[in-house]
Length: 310
Image (tube, rainbow, N blue to C red; front, side):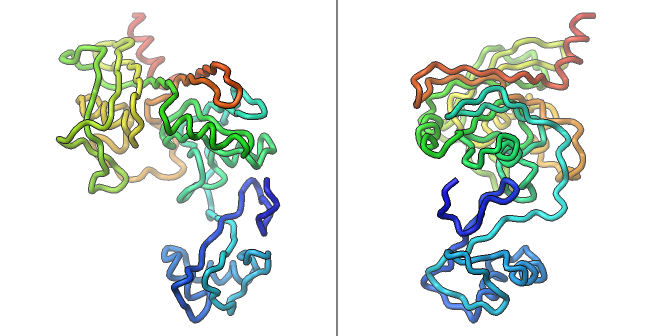
């Protein structure tokens, strides 16, 4: 990790930075922080400043009475109080000097954000592999299990991220969802997906398609189907939205067709039946053909198999 940071890596966490805008003036730093972090208790901000947990670009700790210095940077560590442990392991399937391939369990977020910090794939792997240059090449929803790729050193980060941005990657997913006799598979689902007015969800609208998914039926037991999903574009929640649009929402989806109340943080039952199964691409650094496959299985698949074997 570069030594240009005024704070070291701490427990796998790289320090964050906050810009103090050039065009603004505040009576002191604390007044600015109260507005910048409206959802954080003033007492927490006071405590962090009293501990010297926030520093300037030279590493000098800021205090409760520190002035607001426009056009400067403030460095600090993100903190999440009382973070709930996710009781599932993340497996490393492959690693070399460029690439790390992990098999993520359900309920583990890919990267820090919101109420998740230590209990994320990125921070767990940084500590597990003792590699603080590790960075995500792409992401999976917290609800989705399966393959997640990381760049092992910062020199090659751009090459791998470009690979995913240009969609030069072949990915497959598996899902369990209702079986519908009126649908003929394989099929292509095309639609225009955009943000909905409802928090965090997406919707399909009657505009030119900006998303495509190839969907195949692998097996069914009359009630549930086991599906192979091949995203041909990369819109947020695309697979979940497309399956819901066909009238076969993925089992245990808490966003589609209806947004359900947020589950308790320590509840890990009824995982979304969606798995990032495989990924293939030409490595932009080595030129090698790469193909990786998850070792996980969907929870409901065993129930389907038992029914079919009777």
